[in-house]
Amino acid sequence: MARKKRQRLEVTIDALGARGDGVAHANGQTLFVADALAGERCLVEPGQKRGDGREARLIERLDASPQRREPPCRHAARCGGCVLQHAEPELYAAWKQDNLVATMARRGFDADLIAPLESAPPASRRRLRFAVARRNQGYSPAFRAGHSHDLVAIDHCMVAAPGLMEVAGKLCSELGPSGVREIELTATPNGIDALALASSDPDLALAERLLDLARDADLARLAWKAGSGPVYVVAQSAEPAMTFGPVTLTLPPDAFVQPTKWGEERIVSLIRPLLSGCGNLADLYAGCGALGFALMPGPKLSMFESVDAMTVAARTAARLAGLEMTATTRDLDLQPLVAGDLERFDGVVLDPPRNGARTTCEALAESGVGTIAYVSCHPGSFSRDARILADGGYALERVWPVDQFLWSHHLELVAHFVRR
Ligand SMILES: C[S@@+](CC[C@H](N)C(=O)[O-])C[C@H]1O[C@@H](n2cnc3c(N)ncnc32)[C@H](O)[C@@H]1O
Image (cartoon, rainbow, N blue to C red; front, side):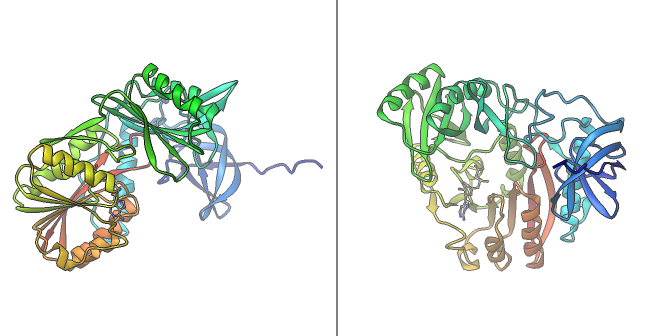
């Protein structure tokens, strides 16, 4: 049967959408066009539904925006990791800033509260997760294509810290045949910490080969995780350690670390003056304590974190550094803090995962905590939580966009709240 010919439309892109696609309107429909900038006239082919509109494939760009540039990465056209390399830096920064302004405006916050965007330099992502893709006769590191689960094999990445791509290439080609689906790499001062995510445990022959592989790739450590099983170390030549303030800590395998050193330092430099006068500080969603430790010595510090390995690492490192603090393993969704738990603190730093900290903010809204520094990697959940705090009597003083996820649609931010 002859394939039905798809309709083609000539459209003018009205704006850049929150995900970096050009947004156009035609025949009462909203169209999302990848690799299209505002003002560009394009010939497009509408395709499958996405949200309240449709994706539309770019057939031909009929005229180009003066703010378009050649993407610096050769994989930019297909790889979904970076969505806006084809825009001049000023347009990229304005797009991210405007997205944050719009998200916060929906919750009733003014654009004047938001500082200008600061972006991480290229080649600064010290932590990346690569998919393992079949390529020719072998296996290669890959990222997902935009709006799709398809894998795009890559041999180069503009955001990855030096050395990560080379190690990713080696590990993917060696471990791909053994069913490893993803490789997570973290560059630490003592070498690269690698985690292989596989569907099953390595057999004896593979386990023996892993030692050689870790040596050849010059890894500090190689850990393994099969399905939802536990993470365990299969080879180690150096402690993957990081220094946070006065504390040097061995990262547990699979520990969270801020994706860039630049971002971690920028976040710390922003929250330090906000919390410097506090005598009793809570670090909520603390991970290994990168933020709380960075404010030490000074305040009495209490960390709360759901992953036991991270609180154990924080406690151990603090003891070795002769620092008094507490680190409590507590899932703040399953065992939420209530206002009474928070009364002893005059300052709180919270840095929740992408879904935010609704229940924690409800407790904070009823508490007498004087100063809150909220670090977020999701402006949407942040704005929801900021509204809870504002309705509970906190003034939002300032928001700083800290662009750790260069060229992607993700954005980190730091916000300062004070009790009125
Ligand atoms: C964005 S990370 C921040 C970690 C730390 N502040 C840092 O800068 O390295 C969020 C942390 O929250 C933890 N987490 C996630 N859900 C949690 C929950 N329900 N209760 C407590 N901690 C949680 C994660 O394990 C992770 O360590």
